[in-house]
Amino acid sequence: MTDDFTRVPGAVCDEHGLLHVGAPLREQRDLAAGAALAPLGDRTVLTVTGEDRLSWLDSITSQALTALRPGESTETLVLDPQGHVEHAAAVVDDGETTWLIADRSDADALLTWLTRMRFRLRVDPQDASDRYRVIAGTVDATAALAAAASWRDPWPGVTVGGWGYAAVEPHPGSEREWVEAIVPVAELDRLIDAAATGEQRLAGRLAADALRVAAWRPRVSAEADGRTLPHEVDWLRTAVHLEKGCYRGQETVAKVHNLGHPPRRMVALQLDGSTDVLPEPGALVHLGENAVGAVTSVARHHEEGPIALAIVKRTTPVDAELTVETPDGPIAAAPELIVPPDAGRTASIPRMPRLSQRR
Image (cartoon, rainbow, N blue to C red; front, side, top):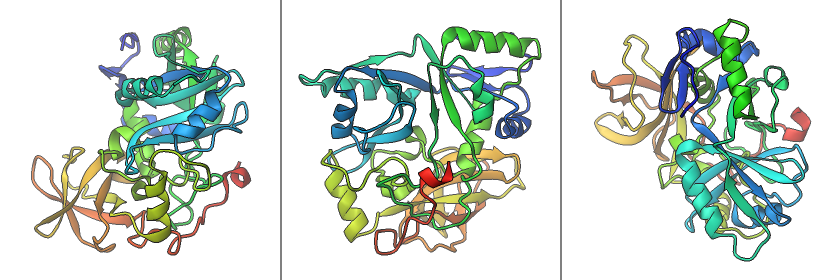
């Protein structure tokens, strides 16, 4: 990253940009309340132009995109032939260009795959990361940005053709209002100048990720380990259309949903807060002496304290007393049910209101 946050008081950065500005918990509150904006250096922008762009993306990914209206937000997955998640992208189209927001760690591989799949169609996928940045916040907070396009996260609504496994109401993500605005580099520079003088509050990626984890929202860079099925992390809600035409991995998606159960399932973990040490992503989750899964995301939330997402074996009891490994030894981890062990069409129903009814 070349963005210069050194002028912002308290800024702490890594290779992907702004981590925090000295108070990650306060930044979470500001971000959720619409009082701050979060530059997301771990997100990047791809574009697809050409007359066939939407029908082409529809044919090779999990979401129905052919009839996507200008300004409408959705997301889609690229699956392998066995239905495992390989890539993910937020999608918004402006009538001429389809904008894709992807995790930076996944974007190069996604672009390479898209380029290979062009064949003779009128499509042109490009890397736009040198010209655009992603800035997140609430609808009101992002409204004043000079954005080329804005993606409003459909999570946790159940979009048309989708299916929700988490049956809790209200869903923890239902209060999370999240927009990712695609802005020219100059717009981020303007925000940095405003933050340097105290005119604009910024929040770092730690704050943004804590709100995501609390909302049970999966990310491909965290929850996809090469074996992840979209069912296991409740991603049928917003990223899969169960009634659309053929795409790679569709047979597995339909079979697991209609006839079986995913072999693993995502859980939320309330971690023991008596220690300052948090587990790292990848830390093993134990039931007694047996490893039953691994942590995928970890955060310290401004209300809930230390929390995590983990993927565990389907057969792990829903009320199990779990522990998680940390550098200082195991700590207690109380699981919250996200994807039930019997997840599938016969055991779960799309309980959340349809997205079109919620917004």
